[in-house]
Amino acid sequence: MEGGLETRIETLAQWVYESKYLVVFTGAGVSTESGLPDFRGPDGIWTRQEKGLPPPPMQRPWSEMDPNQGHYAIRALQDLGKLKFLISQNVDNLHLKSGIRQELLAELHGNITKLRCQRCGKQVEKATGASRCSCAGRLVPSVVDFGQSLPEKDLSESFYHSERCDLFVAIGSSLVVTPAANMPAVALRAGAQLVIINHGETPLDKHAHLRFHEGVGKVLPKAVALLKRKIRG
Image (cartoon, rainbow, N blue to C red; front, side, top):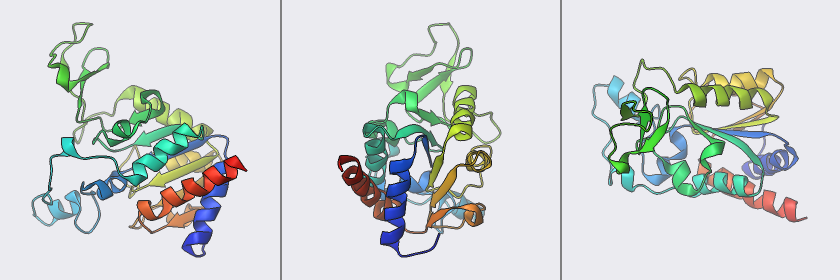
């Protein structure tokens, strides 16, 4: 769908209002306004790596970064009872910091603040200093490295909800890293409307029912504000 920004934001708010099963999917682009680099943008981590350059400099460590208005807009969708499930490719812990409930979140690539049990898959906060799980399994960093399998529970939950949603909103992702990037395609095949909010192009742009090239902060908070007005009548 084409049209001016305000028209598209109004459409997004209306679709979320009408949705019975909203799934949101986030990539690194949702966290750039917090000061974190993206991956495939012009100055992204992988873009620089391919050019033989070091990662972009950061003003503060990842652990000190705070959620931005995009994260809080997604949290508002949860609090309004509209968010069925949130799938994230990010490891920065900012969704949980913003107040997203753990049971509504799949972190497909892990979380920098958590350890994972090699035996049972349970996650434990790094801050506990534990090296063994309650099942006696060894605790290792939960962040998934290249070539490693994604956490089975998070992956299966992501497919489950993607197959059942009526509205899938992909935010800040180039949608090229599989299997995570398969989720919007699964939603499309199930008949869901697809919304993409991302600066750069994605392989699914031609299939999107609504497309935003604008930043997350220019789109999502305004859409949520309109949604609140619709809910209040």
